[in-house]
Length: 157
Image 1 (cartoon, one colour):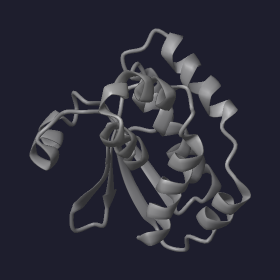
Image 2 (cartoon, rainbow, N blue to C red):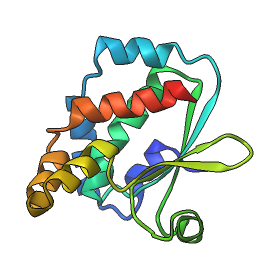
Image 3 (cartoon, helix red, strand yellow):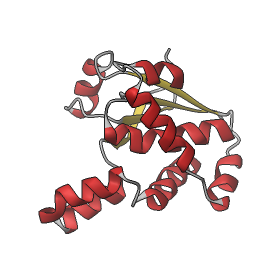
Image 4 (tube, helix red, strand yellow):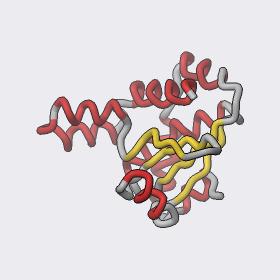
């Protein structure tokens, strides 16, 4: 199974992994999120289907990776879109990335596909501003909301 370091190498000549690491360095979790993530006391297994060349992946992955660094009960396995294309098609009907699943040992539970809920909500409220919303997502304008959305999901498991 692939690790974060493996993810950084998926179809990359170094340019995209450098971008990903710069984004990682810029993200600082709130004290509230740190407390929430540290309070998780059972193992949570997450499958992340992503590729480092994808700007949407680079916007989401830092949160999941930082959560797993904070709490070793959060286990993250990475897979490329090519490796998981059949799984993605069977579970979602699409091969969009990033896609995140919680593995409860009985089944994979989808909890994010391509965009977080906060961004999808913005798209639905302002469909004529799709490109601007997507750009704002990629440059971090939704980071606080994404951090909360993802951490809230993990503590709800």
